[in-house]
Amino acid sequence: VNLTYELSDKMNLRFGYGKTVARPTFRELAQYTTFDFVGDAFEVGNSNLTRTSIENFDLRFEVFPRVGEYIAASIFYKKFTSPIERVTSPFNNEPKDGLTFFFRNVPEATVYGTELELRKGLDFISPSLANFKIGTNVSFLVSEIDINPQELETIRVNQPDAEATRPLFGQSPYLVNALVSYAGENNGLSINASYNVIGPRLFLVSTGGTPNVFEQPRHLLDLNAKQKITPKTSVKLSAQNILDA
Image 1: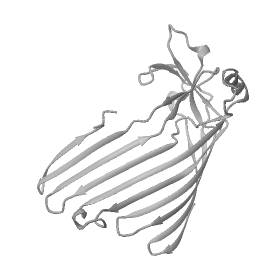
Image 2: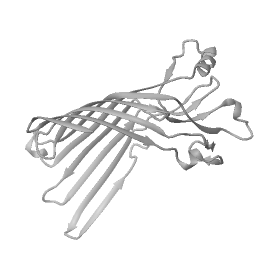
Image 3: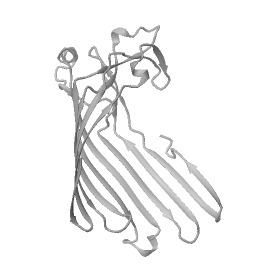
Image 4: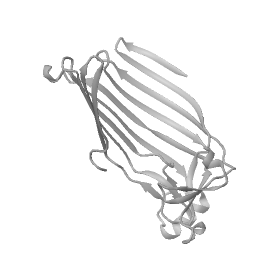
């Protein structure tokens, strides 16, 4: 459900509600062991997994200064019922076998936060920058899952002040995307430089009171360039992960 109220010809206030489901993948369901090369571990599926139900509420204010430009700010709230997470247990990991991942549902989780978006030409700074545009998308999020009481009791044996909640599996506390583009009207040259980073996200939930595993941020910078030589001929150049993160 989406409702839009036009504040003016160039301003909108939008409200959105949506309900979706996320179904387990075949690997998460199938009760056989596979090897995860990224995690250097074995994965075992769980045939008792159920699908995740997600409710989403959004409120968004947007401004369109000119054609092709926009500035927007949003707040959102999401409720997850039976989210799926990747788990390991120190009691099921033998040195000769290596680390083993499992999958399970947890009762519920919440995510809320804000998002800021911008796409604008730079000619307002100087006419010489008329061929340049910038774009960015920044999100700040808070996610929470209540830790199982028995699991929390085990955690507090070694960490008495441990919180009763933890982040949602796979959810970063912030995301940043940025783009600078150049499009020459007369020389046939176009260049795009893009930057992306996500905050530390929960990669593996560890039971038995041992610490959880978090994937750390990577600052990714990519470059794409295209030179048009004739109406039917062009040369392209792409470079990824320029910062070697």
